[in-house]
Length: 106
Image 1 (cartoon, rainbow, N blue to C red):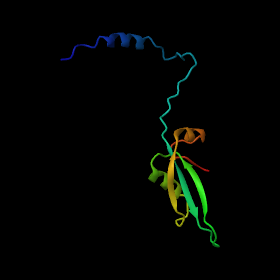
Image 2 (image 1 turned 135 degrees about the vertical axis):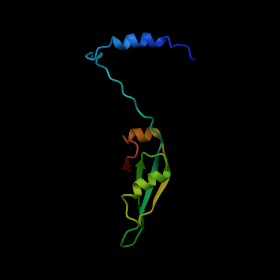
Image 3 (image 1 turned 30 degrees about the horizontal axis):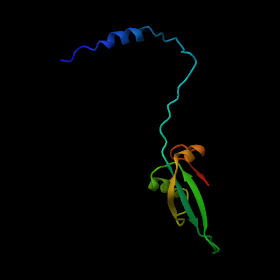
Image 4 (image 1 turned 90 degrees about the horizontal axis):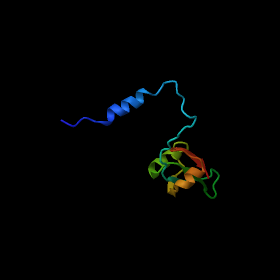
């Protein structure tokens, strides 16, 4: 049998002394989930009338290249190739104000 936890009675007394009506000192804490790198995604569009292809760049807040491609491909036409081009560093993701799964056009 484990020895009794001697800290529990002290903790219990301290918690019992907290009033439900206390509001604290007016400060708040925010815990941020760690953000990871994102992906730069390239979309190639072939013009209907011919000519040079048009390339568009998207910045996606998703570390996995396949998932980043899927996020962008979901809004593209089926004949527009979507390719994860490379990582987007975490500071760039934050500077763009992106949250996980968000994207913006470059």
